[in-house]
Length: 578
Image (tube, rainbow, N blue to C red):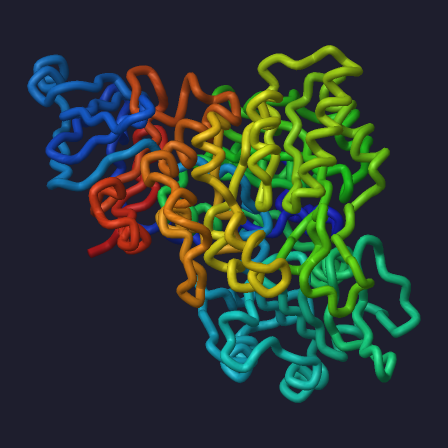
C-alpha cells in the first residue's frame, strides 16, 4: 500500500471527484445482520421480490449465510433447514436485490464532499443570494471555496453572475460547478489564480466565455476549461483525506440502496487509491470502473495495470470493466450532436447541430481497438447524430475484426435515441444505459432548445423495452440526485420540473421494468449476472429493504418511498434511524 502521506496528482483529481458524503452513515450505528461466520438470518413477512423473471415474482422467506443467499422459499422450510437462524420480521416491507449503479461518478461525488453541495438534493438554495450564503458558510480547501450541483432552473432569479461572486468574495477564489459537471463559474480571484485572461486559449472542446460586447471574461467555463479549473482548484491531498471522501460517498450511496457503484473517467491514481481502500477495509460496496482515454491518454488503456473485467480482491472490490469512447455530451448545454439543428442556436452558428467531442477517425479507431482486444466498450452518445456515429463505428469494428459475440457493449446515455436506432441496438446486441431522471431535470429545457417533438421523445425507456433492447438505468449522480426511487418515478411518470409530461402514455415505463434495469439488467451489463442482480440461491446477499413496494403504490408516489436498510454481502451498511 502507498503511504498515507502520498498525494494525488492534479490529473488524478479530475477523475476522482466523488467519494465523501455518506461514509459517516456507514460508520453510524447499525445492526450487522450476519456478523459471525456461519450465522444464518431468515427474512420473512414482507414482500420479497426476487427480480428473477420478466414479471414480478415473490417468495415468503430468504435465508442468508456467510454473505450468500442460502435459501429462497417458504418460511417453514427456511426454519426447518436453519433451526438456529436469526429471524427478521420485515413487517410488510419490501425486500429487493441491492441496487446496482449503471453509470455514475463515485470518485467525483467523493471529491465534491470537500466543498458545499448546492444541488436540489443537497443544501438546495432557492436564489442567488442563498447560493452565495451557502458558499460563505464553507471553509476553503486548498485555498479555494468550491460548490457543486447548482442549477439555474432551481434558482428563482437565475444563474449567479461574476458580479455576484466578486461582490461576496473579492479576494478568495471561488469555483462553482453546474449540476451537469461539465460547466461552471469562477470569480475574478479564481480567474487570476488560474491565470485565465481574455487571451488564454481554451482547451478543446470547450470555451473560456467572454462577453461579446466587451471582450471581458464572464467567469463561465465550458467543458475542458472547466475541468482544467476543477483539477487545479483541488490540487493534491493526502490519502487519508481520499479515504475519508470515499467513506462519505459510500455512505451517501448506501443510504439510497446501492450495493454496487460505478466510477468512470478512471485515472492511474484512482486505481491505486481504490485498491488501497479495499486493502484497508475502507469500502464495502463494489466499484465498477471505466477508463476514458480522452482525459488520461491511450497508454493508460493499452498498457493497463489491471486485468480487464476482473475484481481486484477475489470476487469483490474494484473491477475495471471496460473503456469509454465519448462521441458528444450534454444536450441541455447544446453539446450533443443531432441530425437536425437545435431550435435555439443563440450563441452558435445558424443551423448548429452540435459537435463531436473528438475527430470521427479517432472515435472509429478507439472502438475498433476495444473490439480487437476484447475490451468491453462503453460508448457515450446523447444526440441522435452522436448515436448514429457510435452505431456506425461499432458496425465497422465488427466488420474489421469479425468479433460480434457476447460483448455487452453499452451506449450511455442514449438520451435522444430514435426508434430506428433502437432496432440497431437490438440487432447489434447493444445495451441502452439510460438516465430517466434526465427528463425531469431537463425536459423543459429540451422543449425550448429542441422543440416539442424531440423533447417528447427524449429518454425512450419504454420504447427500448418494447423493442427487446436490454436497458440498464442510472442516475448519473452527482449530475442528478442519487435516488434510485426518484429515477424510477421519473421513468414511470415522465414529469418535468414544471409539471409537463413528456410524450404520451406509451412512453411511460413500467415500474417493474425500471427495477429490472437497476438490478438484474445492470448486473448483466457488468457480467455479474451469475452473482448479483436477483434474489437467487448462491448469489451474494446484496439486498435493500424499502418501506413500501414500488409495484403497488401509484407511480407518482414512488419517489417518496424510503430505503430502510441496505445489506452488502449479508451485513448492514445502512440502517435508517427512527
